[in-house]
Length: 179
Image 1 (cartoon, rainbow, N blue to C red):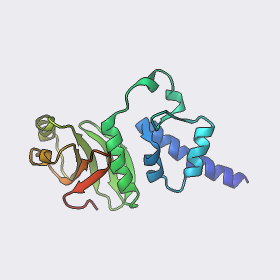
Image 2: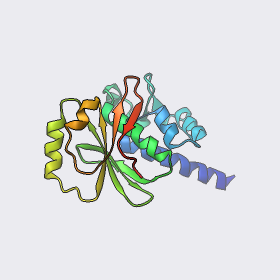
Image 3: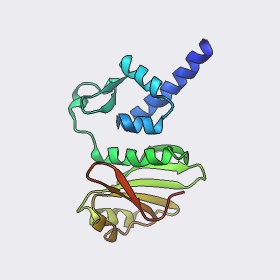
């Protein structure tokens, strides 16, 4: 029984660490990232270690209060969808929040370094300027866009793929495949 409890505790710690890292995550994103841990997620909710808001977002229990009323970061939510797609393929070995303008950075099992960048419509010039100043050797970018016409305006080095947000919230990918 103790071995099971310790394993269960370690599996829930990993979920809590992810929620701490990103602060807000949707249920379907948690399931995509942890497909074999639905039971652990439900236990964390029941024990109020994570909180399910009325709109379906999960927020760590320690953030309940004033922060709960803040509007979730739609750009981070979109980046988590992209990350979940890559994690579900088994190709991500590590991920974390990133320095702006990127939202998330991750390393693949083959050792490639990626940044997931969200570019809001009309912000292409600013993002281009930010990346012009950064040294980006060996960094690949997955760029989330809101409209297909944005891809022609972006001059970010190392774009591996574009991720287009569809009206229903789903994401369609364009460009060459990330490893």
